[in-house]
Amino acid sequence: MPWRHLRLLMLVTALAVLGSAPAAGASTTQRCRSADLRYPFEPGGPKTFGVFKLQVTGGTCRTAHRVARSWMAEFELEGLLGRVRLPRKVAGFRFTDLPPDAAQTYRQRGRRGSTTIRFDYRVPNG
Image (tube, rainbow, N blue to C red; front, side, top):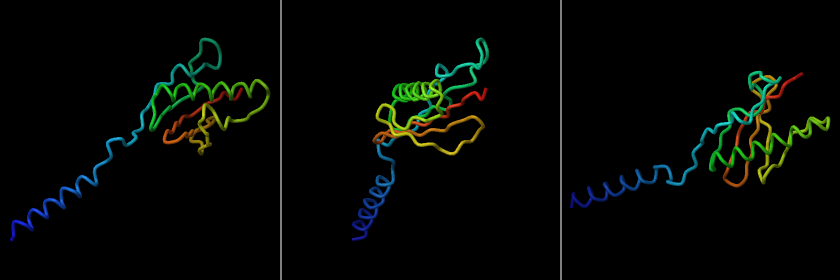
């Protein structure tokens, strides 16, 4: 009789451990390179403006890079037209402004389904 209880206890413990383990398909956040999405204030200067801190959750860096490049192109086009308007939808992603953590920075979060892209976009003020 005691062996039965021991087996039951072992089975319940094993199920509890398996139930608390993270799912195999759980999304992880990846940091992605964004150096080629930056530009200098003047020719030959350091590339201190553009996309920084590019991250993707539930997707690939390739997708994050493509979407950040598209967002940047739309934003800069608006600037050339004399408007400061942040793109809200790019490549199927809906973007939201996050509170800034540095001067001259727009923090963005874009979501499409289970994929989330985050980045900071720094602009020159001159």
